[in-house]
Image (cartoon, rainbow, N blue to C red; front, side, top):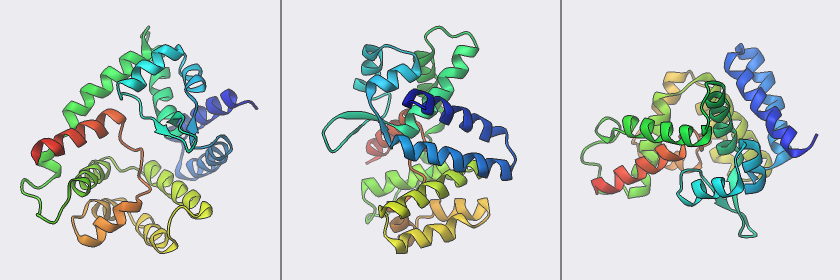
Length: 231
């Protein structure tokens, strides 16, 4: 199986998980995790453009504008996080099926509009945060309160899988990994309360959060801008 086939398989599994029972979802997620591990955490722009069905200049345009997330690899290459690419791929596929010609542009526009509607700091952040809270901490709190509002069994399963990968690769301190395992084994309402708490311990816990990548890049940027504007 080549890398494009692997990306297509990951996308199909993700869509199957959305309609599966909890038991089936766990089995599908296990297979998807293996495929994701085989392909790596980031994808080169040429592969990403091919997967999304757009030209490389089109993808570069959206990357340069910050509408698609990117990271720098140790070799200083700009690549697209796998989770970002798969999420975009699912939305682009739906847009094409509904008859949209410029599907990627339509998806990004819809994400922009959705971000403007959902980022409400008056709802998710205290009007006067404590003086000891630094801007990154407030942004992390806002991020996790949005995640808490959207929490689903599938998101929790993905967080568990991500935590397992981090643990096996040594990317997270075992003490924090164990604390996150305890949190993620609780019912959804208790998980939501734990990740959205403003307590000092929750603030520390969020620094190693396995809920990375839940929000779209548009939502993440809008949230950052909104917190900065409130300073």
